[in-house]
Image (cartoon, rainbow, N blue to C red):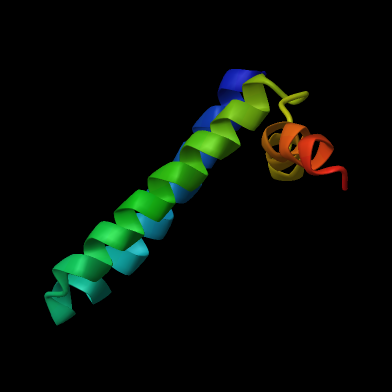
Length: 76
């Protein structure tokens, strides 16, 4: 079942890219293409990881993990 969710996410990303890429290709903007590709890949990886590992910590938990020792050290 998880494989079907991952395949669905991948299909959505592919359809999104097929829709957006010609617009980026028309303008011939290399930086925008690179930014689109990187952001899309990061989003795809996060979505697939959340399908396979739903108990993964969220962004605020990761930030708290790194800054809690500093906060304790500073006495806040």
